[in-house]
Image 1 (cartoon, rainbow, N blue to C red):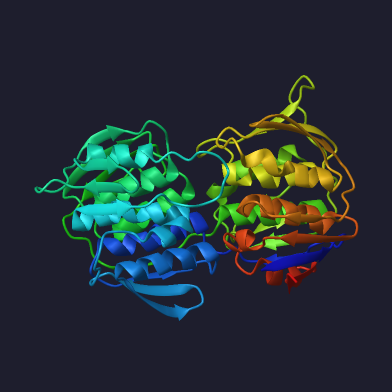
Image 2 (image 1 turned 120 degrees about the vertical axis):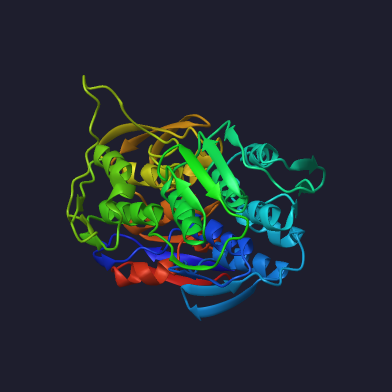
Length: 430
């Protein structure tokens, strides 16, 4: 077990390059199951979640070769089973992303309950509804057993009851391996979903409507290999923007996709954090900004709320809370997606933040407050980053325990923060 020890109060300045999108890398790794040819994936973030999924793929029979820290070459020609190991599935929610590829290529998938962050109930129904629409049967006992008919899956036109990100990704992967045209309506269209569609196109499918909520998948009976680079992580970019904002640092974040940041930049501007997108893909955060919450027209309470893309990403809600503690004024943070996401704010309150929890989905943050160092523990990936943001601007020394959760989503975060000037050390817990 390890912890981070942070001495706050130092502006974080310099240049940083975002890692590959965690939420894209996981389904892209699972895509390797769809073909018996080589799949090379570049810009894979070196984090615990990708390592966990790679272990699961190896257990199924996929050969994995590390080309370098962020590049893997996979071959699923000798996959020997379609029953996912329960212990490996428990480590990561993305284990369920193996279901669509296994079903499409081998006709069956036995899936134990997936693990993941405890941020609220995360339904599997959209995944299972998609599989049923393609003709599969689903038996739900201790494990979920999904079976295609003897004649194979059939193309279909179906409507998802919610725009589930992973549900859409599973549907895309399954439909890509079925010859014929499948239409997915009310689909999720986040940047990571778009990345999955682009990779499936490289493998031989033809997917129309990428970036919209209606996608038409022209699947093929046999998909091929490909070489693909994971897109930059807009959630990590948003996290670095907030780190610069609370410390007053000047930061250049290179390699950004401007369209992925439109709503993030707009929401953070409401909290007083200005940013500039340059033509070369650099997101520039000016230094020494005074953060002032922009109230709504008529001097009404400002609000930041998340929702399906292109709304503000749910994964940045915790980061927005931390940023708001340093902004002058009050803001309502409305987390619509997960009922447990905001339950970490007691840790920020213990550091001196002024936050009122209205109900499981809403909190009012009043700032700015001088935070003080404290000893806290990370309950999930994004809450852990929110505590890091609080710690780097706090007065005194903070200790963040259970950093394994932060490591699940942020590559070498302590090293990269030190390069920007942060006083942060990773030390063993004694």
